[in-house]
Image (cartoon, rainbow, N blue to C red; front, side, top):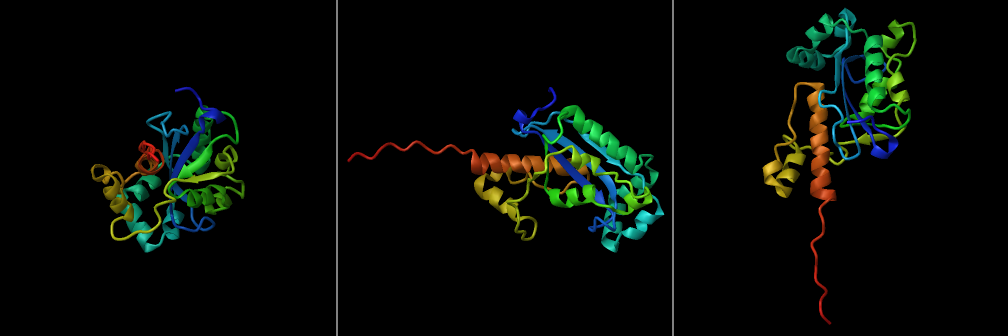
Length: 216
């Protein structure tokens, strides 16, 4: 697929794993990016994915839940063994985005937790402070449009597993399995894209049935 222009409606899907919820006190451990056009077709199946190098200070930033979760998934170990600095990762991700969407302020940042992810990309967090105060991650949103797209905005209420599963089962029982928990950031994005496709097909693109005029 060729690089996208504004007419293609490009979406840059981002998912982050971090040491916590506070963008000013925590740092990015993992970043994944997939890019689609406005029709939700992937331009590159493999996407872009990096685990960011971190040291002992990252462990101190995590609460008990976060430390247990990232240890269980292997992210803590992977981050400690990574050779990719935050600066290197940010530049590589930007190059990947610019390869597929060369023109600045064209692509929209998208994802199921896009406002959370955007806050980390724009924040002056501990990794920025350790870099002498020079911004690292904001080169990514600086290339994107100011708008954000929240893929899971219609999935707000949760009850047990996920209220969306109930809604999906009512609309189409054979497709109620499409939302699930995934171990990787890239798979999280793929899940969000599948979810948005489902909503588009099930709720927004259904053609109304033809109704014959009632004779007078």
